[in-house]
Image (cartoon, helix red, strand yellow):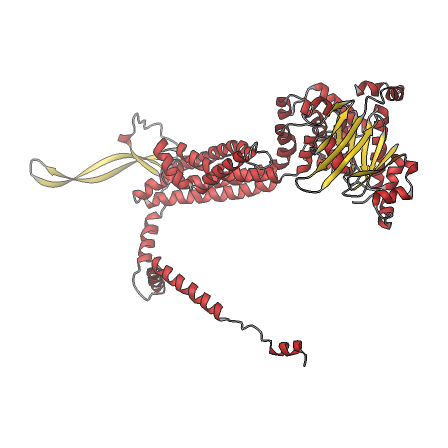
Length: 281
Length: 335
């Protein structure tokens, strides 16, 4: 579905606006709490549009990662619901709908001793015959698709057979993105995708994410803590603090007052500095 | 003078040796003394002193010295060749002798009662004997190979059984806590059971021979590998696993893509260690009749043929040494 959208880039935007209302990822009254522990997300409401690049901005512990993990089914919400195109995702976990969401991880989440191409093909392992997965004998179409995705993320063929652990941080995250794209998602949920990358590499990875989202009409929800990068790349910024949304607006509306709401006290010199250099680990 | 400085003036350092320490040391000494008597350590000291006396020439004989002399005297020269009377070999062909062998005529004297004279007379009989110069060594090498084979099969058995057990017995992949507990306790039981004891019983069930040895060592190996493999699965990096879970992968897929590639070097290293151990222990379980060179050694020991026992011991030593070096090298490479 998205593959056809990708091949028809010129009218992708017009298609987006047409389906804007039904192709949405929505969180309604979402609450997450750990067993007898603190509440991480409190009655959260958020709706994401396809093709839109949304940055989830907040300090550590504000609930950004929890929101993303809940969306892909890694965490079960205490209450509320997640819906995609009007169909509910939570509960019995309908596999087909779930496969429209892909996650990109802060620490890449690659199997270090598997090859790059094996890691990318793992993106559709859940939809592939178990026997083929065990033998790592994927159908030719899947192999071809994995190569296409790797080319899309600008990774040259000499890396395809290398072990994932032998790649640089930036290359690893490209592989992570290629894997996420394998299942042709409608939404990409990136959890601090550049947290462990140097500023130059981080910039390139963010550019790639933005570009891919736009070309393929994929909605991106990207959690960040770097204010400047958020401003630079996003179409929309959602600020989180203590499990609640405290800001939702365009990057230009992100005033000092809004930042104070998101980060509590005015951003410390360290935060300002790190947001400029783009790295804070 | 303030109160603090007054109490500081009265402060005394603790004695280095307190009454408590003296009492504990006394109690330990008394216990050790009682135990030493039960262990008959006094006899040992007596024998050792005698032996030391003999070494420096204070006394003529000692029990330890005599035994050592007798055993080493009989052990050397080591038995390497094998003699077989030609009459015992069916279809013997004098023109086609086996490799490294020769024929020898041996004469022996036989005392016999002459029925006519009713007197004991000595007769000389001549026998053709086939001497295979390295016959016994070759025989032992074949037995050693059998021992190595027992170790290899036992390891194969242990690895194949351990992998599924480890998956079901790891906290993160056990389908139910009861299954986890059941498997972990079964594995502990196998580890606690000494292989020599289980070999004794398995010999009763399966008869003398390699099968009892393979099972005894294999089950003990499951006890080790089942635990170690499970611990490897439990402590493997959760990040790739989480990424696969987020993609909707099943537990089996997560194991195949997210767990096993990462822990494979560790599993190989552990398996090679167990292989090394199994080959060493295969000589020991042979002693109770579970096949291999151990069984041969035990038989010769019971027949007081110490020259053959000596050859077997030497061969075992050489093979274990080579194995130790090889396994250390291989483990260094895979991990």
